[in-house]
Length: 84
Image 1 (tube, helix red, strand yellow):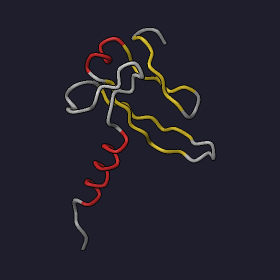
Image 2 (cartoon, rainbow, N blue to C red):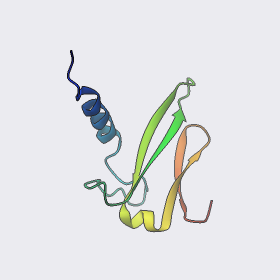
Image 3 (cartoon, one colour):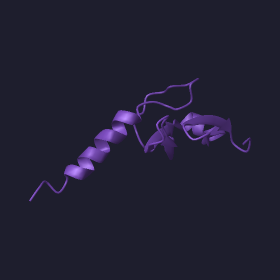
C-alpha cells in the first residue's frame, strides 16, 4: 500500500516551492504565516499551450489595498481594490 500522506506532502511541497513571497513586485515580503494575507490560485497557460495551476500570495498589508487579477492567459498583476 503506499504512504497515505504522500500526496498531501507533495502538494504542500509544491505549494511552498511556488509561494514564498508577496506577489506585489514593490513589496516582496517573505511568506511566514498563512493567516497573514490572501492566497490566490489561477490556471495559467504556457507558451506551448499547456495549463498549470499556480498559487500567489499577497501579504496582509498589500491585501488591504489591492487584489491579484489574471491578465491574458499567462500572467497576473496587482490592482487596487475596486480598480479593475
